Image 1: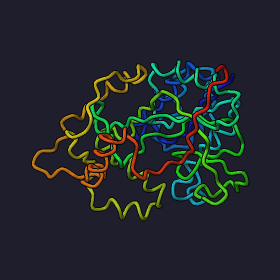
Image 2: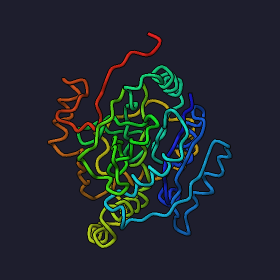
Image 3: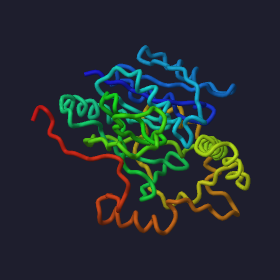
Image 4: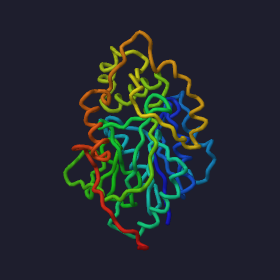
Length: 318
């Protein structure tokens, strides 16, 4: 069994992505790690950050981004596909650069890949998610956030990154351009794996979080629209009231140790003399739905979108 890790990134160090920790978190169980590295800004040092890992498993594919050809976040999916196409594995393990796997999950992940290797019905593996918010001690459980997502796929040329690269679909006659198409696309048949992705995308210094949001909206909607969206907003992101979020009392992945040491914005999480901003997960509608889902439905979302077909295959050795 051969497992390939893969990802895509651009301006990771400039925008405070834990890209090194993300890659290192699965290196022990992958045979290679392919990353599509987009040409970044002059003050970005992502290439050096990746090279400092000093692993022969890592393969860097240098790319250029074309936001006109792939608008609306489609370039994220395109870059993901570029990395995917260079993978040799039976299974392909995808992580975005703000996603990290705790070392405690690695044995279960590898075992699951091995026991389902010959079951061709299984096209991917579904992971749980833990979305950290504001700092490393709080995380979100909300109807407004996705609780699970596909992060391991079979090496099938018909499987492509989809929409803005959050997930995957099988697209047999894909034209290589329209990553938002729905017609003639198929949700992957996936099996669950007893593992969790730690998502740190919303844990940044407030000024860096705002810069990342501007960058994201520029990629999604273009520079003019992004300028319009943020012209009335402050330069510092307001995380709102994090006191109502879940408290994280477990350990973080060991590879995140040095990155977490940089945390120094605690005094900016509760701004004085200002009305705390309400985010989507703070709104009454989503808080009510979340309460019902967690209290009575074992965390299953009410009419939640699922970009997969969950199946329950028996391992080959049973």
